[in-house]
Amino acid sequence: METGAQTIFKEREGQIHRKGEEPFEMTCNRDSLAGAVSQRACVFCGSRVVLYPIADALHLVHGPIGCAAYTWDIRGALSSGPELHRLSFSTDLQEKDVIFGAETKLYSALTELIDRHKPNAAFVYSTCIVGIIGDDLEAVCKRVSEEKGIPVIPVQSEGFKGSKREGYNAACRAMFRLVGMRETTGISPVSINILGDFNLAGEIWIIRDYFKKMGVEVVANITGDGRVADIQRAHGAGLNVVQCSGATVDLAKMMQEAYGIPYIQVSYFGVEDMAEALYSVAKHFEDKDPDILRKAQEVVREELSVLYPKLQEFRKDLEGKKAAIYVGGAFKAFSLVKAFRLIGMKVVLVGSQTGTEEDYRELYEITDEGTIIVDDSNPLELSSFLQEQDVDIFVGGVKERPIAYKLGVGFCDHNHERKEPLEGFVGMLNFAQEVYNTVMSPVWRFAPRKVKRAREV
Image 1 (cartoon, helix red, strand yellow):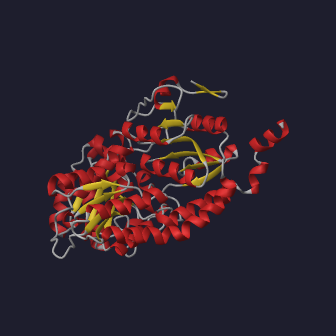
Image 2 (cartoon, one colour):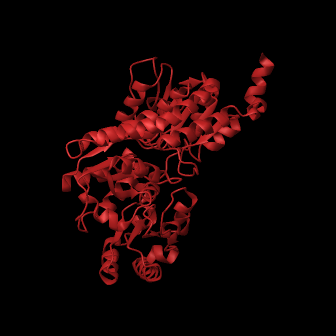
Image 3 (cartoon, one colour):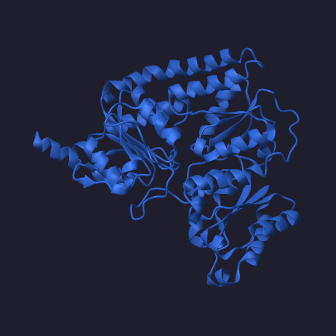
């Protein structure tokens, strides 16, 4: 398959689809192609992304010091209280530890850190080298838990096991060990757990406020601005509301099987999906609160009365501009396609690192003819597609930013590093404002691709 002057690796052809050229078929959930410099992260990375926002827990990386460099401190997850999660701890394994084992070192590190920081729980992350040398994390954690009187939980996140998605599952299995440890007395029958939101730039506080206005109690944030005690009584909630499906849906399924708690999957990005999230929760609890749907409608009406006029102003200049999307989880891609459509822009490229066949089928259904859909892409492909489609803005994460800027394309950070909330109705306004400021910036007149095009004209 060719795109412009670039050639896509033959082994990758099944993971790229151009809507309208042939019947839809996508290959996904496969190992990254060796040598293709995939944007994917490892199992260990996936587990840390999910668990680290639990702010009053100790997070200890059992492995070489380099692994601990991937800390939440470089991310935008905020806490309304403790900030122990922002510290990065490691057992700093050396050659001697690899040869003779490091269980004693792990025990010493855990006891010292627990005595010093007084956490409400501790998570111990297994890295690649620990999986190879065979340290018994379960035994060490059990011993320390009995001695210190707090949950000490091993996270089986050896990086070589697979991709980031397997890390999500490892994190969910670790968290599930906390669920059910506390009483649920006093929890409202109209109550939820918020799963899959990491409180980037304070986003979970925006969402909680919407639910509060509807009369819905939030029992636990899982995991943004999370607390150990809340997760321990999360089994008392009436519904699990899952946003990042890839990251926490496994936990929702475990809780459904063990405690009978139903779950729904939603998105808080964009006007349509944010409103639908509130309505879905309201419809679930209508039998317990007949007035809840009306309250949800009032919240949406109030927010849209402020939002829509401003969006129309942006649309006047953005109409017909082109956007490309490449994100970690496909759930964000669905909402972003709709959000761009709302401000008059056309999505010509969309993809994710960890999407499933079902995810890509949904993307196929909501995108326009000619849209390129990609799974687990790499810089070569992304660069080729951005040039071919002549996009005006690229939405991605920190690893995609250099690709856009080198090509003279506007960029919008929609990953964990962002400092502006993009969820909720106010988040849609922030997103539209950022897109407008970026696309309409006069600096792009001097970008190489624009200068070349002007000369050709």
